[in-house]
Every structure is written in structure tokens, then in C-alpha cells.
Amino acid sequence: MFGKKKTKTPQVKRELTPWEKAQRNQRIVQEEKLKKNKKIQFHLPKFGKTRKTRIWIGSGLVFALVVAGYLFSPLSRVQSIKVTGNKEFSKAQVMKAGNVHQNDWIFPYLLGQQDKSTEVYKKQAKLLSYKVDRQGLNRLKIIVKENPVAGLVLRNNYYYTILDNGKVIRKSKTQPSSDYPVFKNFHSSSVLKTLLTQYKQLPAVVRTGISEIDYAPSKDNPNKLHLYMNDGNEVYAVLPSFAAKMKYYPQMAADMKQKGVIDLEVGAFSYPFKDKSKETTTSSSSSSSANVSSNSISTSSSSSTSSSMSSYSTTSSTNSVSTSSVNTTTN
Picture (cartoon, rainbow, N blue to C red):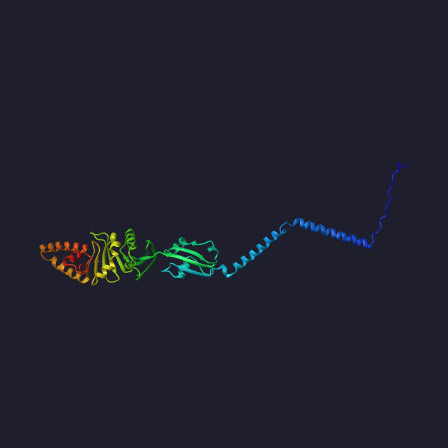
């Protein structure tokens, strides 16, 4: 009884009913769907699962849309340009020199002021300083500082523009301009630079009154200058004291009753042109006379010249110079 093993009776497989088959197939389909969903969830990153990340994603998309809208809107372009500090150059010339145009992108100027002085000076030496400043969202302001024109240098029958800092513009002219004085016979660059140093110290009213400056050295005076003024007067001056004495020219010219010469070589005195011509005739006639009379004239002229240079302040001494004084000046 205890030694015998129990044997299982073999169960005969029965066929499933149609309803059972349908239930089994449905269960298989559901299990496969669950497996697929698990695989997808396993491979997908966790990005976007929390509310915080969804907010960040939404904010980023909104920001991208705003930036895109700004880039394609007129707000991202330069709407207006203002130019200050220009006198000789027009607004269009200043903008062209710095390659700044309306409707350009505003982004290069968003960080603040841009200094284009170096690159602009290479193309246009008449502009010393060139700065671009942003005003508001899409407006620009160009601030320039011009290098004033000193005059025109005559070289080999051509006129070249020279600036206050000594820079000579290569472009030449065959005819001078009436707006600036002409510098003649300045063959040495060092002498020309010395003149410009003195010339820059003159008041504007004196500078505009000069028509021509000639470098006229002599044995007695290697720094002699001969000036032709726009009002018809002529001036003799010395290069080292040119600015110091020439600044008083308006007062000296006003004290003259007629056009003539102002001599600033030693002291300061003046004489009219007609007196100069008369005394030249007198001088030539007196030179043919006796030596004694010539020596006496020379002695009296020296004393008269020194007194005229020391007492220029009175109008009478300015306009009436003695015969011997004029004779000495002519010599």
C-alpha cells in the first residue's frame, strides 16, 4: 500500500471554444502592446516629464519666436542717423567714410559706442576722430572731429592741400582755392612744419585774412616771411615770432589810414604804399649825391627806425613814417 507510486492520469487536450480563443487572442494583443509601451518609455529620456521642464521648454520656444520676430522686423535695422562735429564734410560723406548706412543691422552697435577713428583716418585724413554711438533701440549718432585745412602748398605748379597736423593730401589742383592761403617757396618740410606750428596759434580772424605766405629768406634774415592779405595790405614777419606779432594785425590794420606795408621783423611799424614808392625814388636820387650826404641820411634813418618800432601804439606814428625811416626799411 505504501510502496506504490501514484500515477497521473493523462489529461486529454480539449479544443478551445471560439469564445476562449477570442479571449486568448485579446490577451496576447494586450500583452504585446504593454511590451511595446515599456520599450518606448525605456528609450525616451526623462526630459519633459516634470512641470518645471515643460515651463522651460515653453519659455524657450516663446523666446525663440520673439527673437525671430525681432530679426525680421524694422526694429532690428538702423532707422535714423545723426551726424555732429562736421563742418567741411556733408552728412552723406561722413556716413560713407565710416561705412554706416541707414537700414543696416543694429547688432554691431548694441554693446555701446564704436570707435572707427583709425580705419576712417586711413581713408580720409581730414577726419581725426570718428565714433558711432547708439541712441535708443535703432538710432545712431556719429560724432566726428575734423582735421582743419591749413592751406595750399605750391609745388611744381600744382597746389596740394595741407592740414593743420602737417599731413599733405596727395590729390593736387591746378588752381588754388580762395578759401585757404597759399604757401609758396616752402621747399623744406621742417620750415613748413615750423610755420604750421605758428599758424595754428593765430586767431581765426587773422587766419581767414591771409591770402598768401611766401618764404623769402635773405642773407640778413634767413627766417623772413612775406604775407599778402585779403584786405590789400602786405606784411613782413619773422618765422620764430610770427604768431606772437601777427595776432595784433587787426588792430594795426585798423590804425592805418590807407593800404600799405606792416613790418614786423624788428618791432612793429607800418607805411603806406605810395610813401614807399616816393621814398624809393628819393633813395635812388640821393645815392648819386655826395658820400657825406648819404652817410648822414643813413645815420638819421637808423635812429628813426628804432623809435618807430618802440612807439607803434600811437596812430600818428603808425601812419606817418619819416623819409629816412622808409628809406632804411627799403634797403
